[in-house]
Amino acid sequence: MKSLRIIGLLFLSIACTSQAQDKTTHKKEGNKMKTTETINYATFGGGCFWCTEAIFDQLEGVLKVESGYSGGHIKNPAYREVTSGRTGHAEVIHITYNPTIIDFETLLDIFFNTHNPTTLNQQGADKGTQYRSAVFYHDTNQQEAANKMIEALDMANVFEDKIVTEITAFDAFYVAENYHQDYYQNNKNQGYCQVVINPKLEKFQKQYKDKLKKK
Image 1: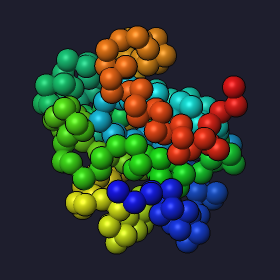
Image 2 (image 1 turned 180 degrees about the horizontal axis):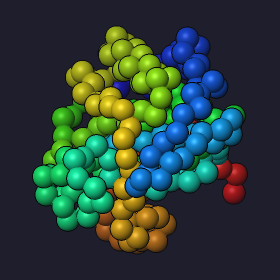
Image 3 (image 1 turned 135 degrees about the vertical axis):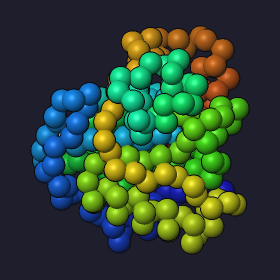
């Protein structure tokens, strides 16, 4: 696979839109959230949210990362319901970030580089619609940026197969149960963290070392 960072930089040069995000409101479990010049939101589904939360939580400019559920047809779903595949929700992370420090295109670049967006309803051994690749956009800028990046990646043949990432308007985000939050930080010695998350983090940290929070 070609370096997505190179493709991302090419894309950034022609599509730097997130510096002028729409000042729209967002719904989270029925509550409204307003964007400002220094606060915005991104919602991504990239397989198991334990992995994606651990990655995005390390980025400078990311203020908060929550694991939860979006894209389904019932309110306040429980984990056991989502894993059944019957609610239509995807496991997602909901990111609060400062767009003056890290822009949406950079978040997209990292999103596409840290999971496989070409496998339908599957990430590795995790199978089902709840593990689908998805961008739940919060405004038209995010929608356009996601579509343009997918087009650029497909045209550059970064992946062997075509990208199947779902691009859908954000509707609601439901926070997952407490034990899912900061899962990696709280369970570093657990087998899944050692075998699956650690290798992803090591690769990510090498590729994006200039984007990490200062310790």
